[in-house]
Image 1 (cartoon, rainbow, N blue to C red):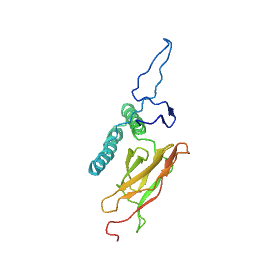
Image 2: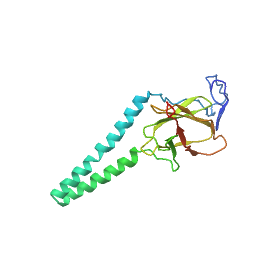
Image 3: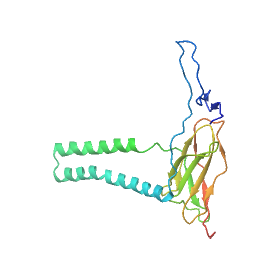
Image 4: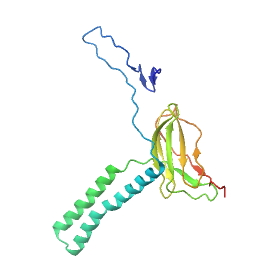
Length: 192
């Protein structure tokens, strides 16, 4: 961005030049390009964090289940109220903790058997800056989906035992926000 004068909808990017103010009533409004810090973690660490996240959801349901058991054993208004509170709290935190999923889904599947692949690491990059934007791990149905807007992107897909995949460029420079949901076949390493 050192030489760029604009970044998408932002014009007159500021790169540390001197700003001369001639009037006391002048309002400064400069666009300073900053990149978010998104580290590219090793695949094992990504899969480990994915497994921990799933375990968190399993542990979180424990509270409402204990409340349900307590209500069954002693059906009092207080235990019923605690049960309702636990269930509502669980649903609220579940709603806040889970990111909104796209309506369209891409599927990563085995090219030969056409079965969806679980635990596949898929990353989206901004082509202009070759910058990692987001990483996802596919679920049991092999699904993924990225929200994207006005730029050119590419995807990389990795799963042990399969050949790594890099997509063609996905040009969304003339589109408003949309979902990237391409179906991606992966080929086994030995080709069988």
